Amino acid sequence: MTAAEPNRFLAETVAAFEPGRALDLAAGQGRNAVWLAEQGWAVTAVEWSGVAVERGRELAERRGVSVDWILADLREWKPPLQAFELVVISYLHPPRAEQRVLWLMAAGAVTAGGHFVVIGHDLRNLSDGAGGPGDPEHLYTAGDVVEALGGEFEIIRAEEVLRAVEGAPSAIDNIVVARRSSA
Image (cartoon, rainbow, N blue to C red; front, side, top):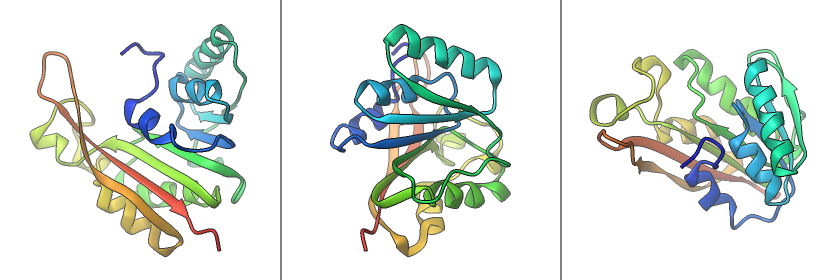
């Protein structure tokens, strides 16, 4: 995998969705945002690092797609309510005290019938996997995300997944895919 390829769990999941408006939170250098745009999504990417945003813009330009980039800190920036058919958080690991607030803020941006996808390093990765944050206060489980979402979402997938790491044991990640109720 190169730095410009999307996260494989995201690509596998989103391949079945009808493109619409997508919000990529903590977009980094844009690999997921640019890939989504290539699949026909109208993408808004939010990232706090100006360097990462610039690299994301360059990647989008090289690939010939448009991504609306927003330079912002997610502790301060809030998305419009129910404005996106897809909201993605990939490998964002704030302190435990901020996780639930972040997930609920992001979930609030999902339209009726839309999807919320969270992918991250699992808490079990700390003892049994490779890579990721070394502080358990920055890790979580799929169950933590599901618990935070409550009843407005149908949980489609919530589980640990293994990701190969060159020269090391596999990383233990987690993925949650949820759909907001249509009613």
